[in-house]
Amino acid sequence: MKKTLLSMLAMGLVYYAQSGEVMVKLMTETGRILEDQFSWDIRIAISNGTDSAIQIVNGGGGAKETQLFFTILPQELMDHAVYEKKLDAPHTNFWEKINTTSKWTEIYTTSTLAPGQTHLWDCSEVFPSIRFLAEDIPTIDQFDMYAQVLVGTNIWAVSNTNTVRFSRQKIEDGDIVFTGTYMGNRTFNVYEHTTDDDRFLFCSFTRVCKIGNGVVPSFEVETGTDILKVTFSDNSPPVRFNISEGKVIP
Image 1 (spheres, helix red, strand yellow):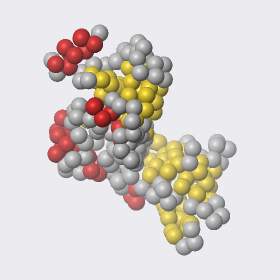
Image 2 (cartoon, helix red, strand yellow):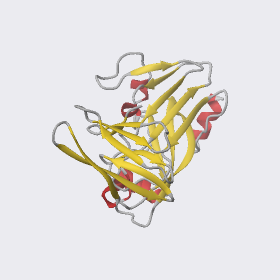
Image 3 (cartoon, rainbow, N blue to C red):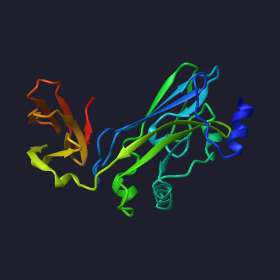
């Protein structure tokens, strides 16, 4: 099998790992992403279906462009992203560092992914925003993307391909549905946007949540904190959002 993979790669073909091998699953945000949205959901699950351990870089920030690479299409968008140093083209430069059991640096550490184990990389905060990717190509409002993971010497596992849709609207183009203060005197706004008939709330340049049609949200800043609590008229589970960090609290 390894000999076949190496032959495929030498021919410039990609390898999509099947059952019994290494599986890579790309998960991306649903709904249109706003142009200045600071971060959006990009997670990658790597599952080891082989009978051998695989060395991986632990964090999404460390794995990106050392072991984990993204390709976006059309090609002109990828070329632009590489030229502007927003993404790197896949390369194998770091495999010797990755393929060790020792600490790599003070920031990036590696670990062993045993047979049957799965590891999740969250790249939501390290992937370039739409504004940085597409600002010079205004005719594009969506792109396809896939992830490619280095799992051995010149051996790659490739994920599914997802379509990412985005809008040229900015968060401040939406309707202000709440204005509040936190940590004493810091003011913030919550905006509502409707894109493709889906309603979303945004705060701190981040998508907070999706809300159903006809549902009325209510807002409260938890006393003495920077936590915004959102509740809903249909009694669906509340959402808690860290305003300072721009993150939904799990």
